[in-house]
Structures are given as structure tokens and as C-alpha cells.
Image (cartoon, rainbow, N blue to C red):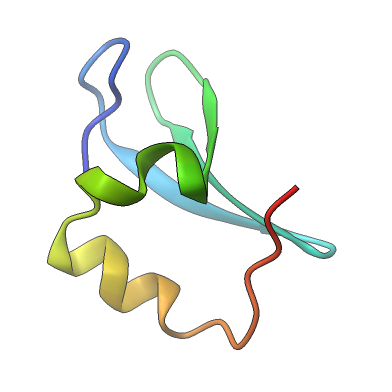
Amino acid sequence: MKCRQCSAQLVVQRRCRQIRLQCTGCRREYQIHEVAADLDPQTEAELERYTCIIYD
């Protein structure tokens, strides 16, 4: 999945009670609901590993 701002790769970042997508280029973070419509199958599969995703 690509960053909307700089087109670098987004990676899943897991923190205490949070899951975020972080850009490897510009380091911008996205909440899941911000990019839900753009999720690719690979990112969806990775997010499926988590039993709970908290939207804040």
C-alpha cells in the first residue's frame, strides 16, 4: 500500500492498544479508517492477524 502524500510504502505499526499505518518515506501516520477504502489485499491480510483494531 502506498502513502497518499509521497507514494512510499505504508507499513503496519502496532502499539499498545493502537494499530496505525506509517509511511516509510515521510513517516506520516494514518489511522485505519482514513485509508480503509484504499487497502490492498496484502495489507488487509496483515491487519486480519489482529483480533481487535481500535479506532480513535
